[in-house]
Image (cartoon, rainbow, N blue to C red; front, side, top):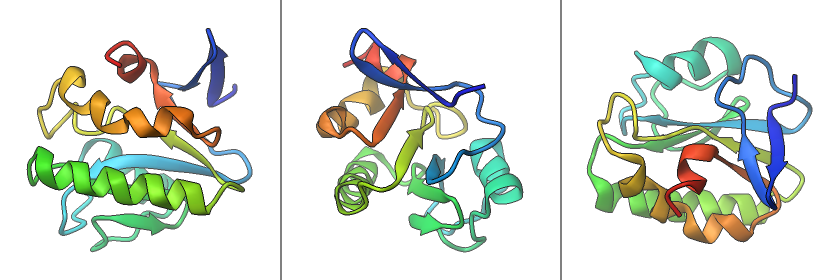
Length: 133
């Protein structure tokens, strides 16, 4: 099963990512302390090598975005993520619906933060984000 799809020209990440292909990175929401205790963060830690104690950036086959500190903080983190994706065109970033689980944000609050990422060929967003852009 593929983790990516192109639908109407949009790069869509699967809602269910159980394994990663070569050079694929699982992008998930965490907290700044990197306590990956639930949701996608726990899954990233157990399955894909997210490092405990790292709440932002690349570790293992993952990229952590701190979502629990407010939308201003999250916007800065997404900007750092976009810069990282630009610096690593050899990697494919599979963005989950970050912030829309335990952090409690609505997709219409988070999706616009990723608007600049829509032009990056190596970033795949969840359909729920595309629906809100």
